[in-house]
Image (cartoon, rainbow, N blue to C red; front, side):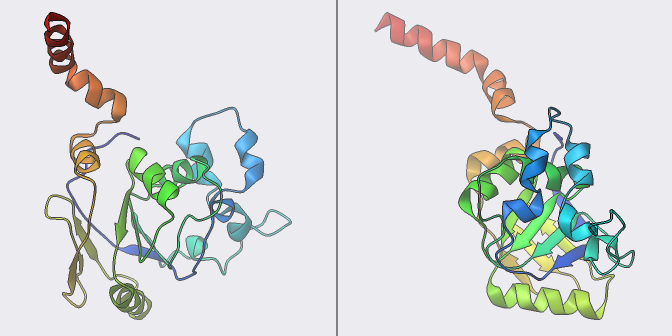
Length: 200
């Protein structure tokens, strides 16, 4: 979903598991779907962890725990490994997460998140560990993600880190633009450049 991104302050959903791959994020059987509707994929985010084999809710999984909420997912190291399926990013966005914080992302998945208006924030292992601890001790722990300043703050402890982001993707997120929107926004400049080339 296209939406402008500036500063987000929210409680978090913790997923302290390492090497969460895209098949765990959205199982392969859902790739056969003919819809591009993010809400469909959001309903099936972490499907095999959220539901038991009989279709009933797995009460022990964090997404089914009502004490956790918010639009920030805090995940363990190496999030989004495995296949390059964009459906994983659709599912994360469709569920309502706007930020995923981890100490490492698989490159393709990281770009897929950015292309679907989800901000992947890379932090140090020590910051991530402290953040998991804060959330475990207080489910209402708030985190502030400031895209203009490129900072993430654990509001419980006051600890803050700077994160990197490609300048082009930062511009697109802050203005709610996808790649096509960006080209259309610069259409006059592109036409002007092409005309100058023809005159050379």
